[in-house]
Image 1 (cartoon, rainbow, N blue to C red):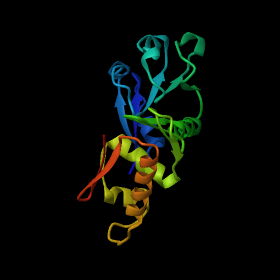
Image 2: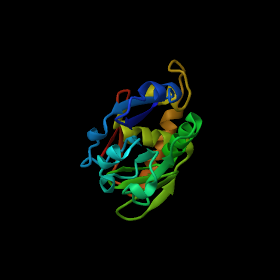
Image 3: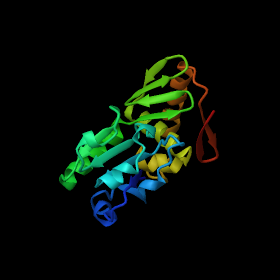
Length: 200
């Protein structure tokens, strides 16, 4: 399954980006479509080509899930230190690498938990534990989607064909639930038939 990526730009570069970001599920939006009230858990890229574009952005209202790609000198932009940025012009490969590194570095939040790299923390009591790479992929997928199928996880994360009988996913879920209990989060992973849901 492809990672979802929102691209906010008022410039006609959709086909160019689609070509070298084909491994992602891209949604193209206008700069005016940024929702400042909803602190996005999606991965967002904002592309700013000129002062007019920059003036449309309320940078102070964005969270860390936004990567700013700009051809303007940073002094012209009202950026806080938490943003990741990339200067353009640059090569398509540099943009692709920057986006991939950005996705890997993102913190994910859901109710009372935060995931920073492989560290899972309860924000209420500061208890934490560490996730394996597979556990991290499963949990961040659930946080992004809120609900997904076991088949999607088996095929896309565990790389197991859907017709293969295995308890591998159940074993990973048991370990994730145990770690969540250890940090005393109210967040739960529920199973309904072949669906998995993350709830409070």
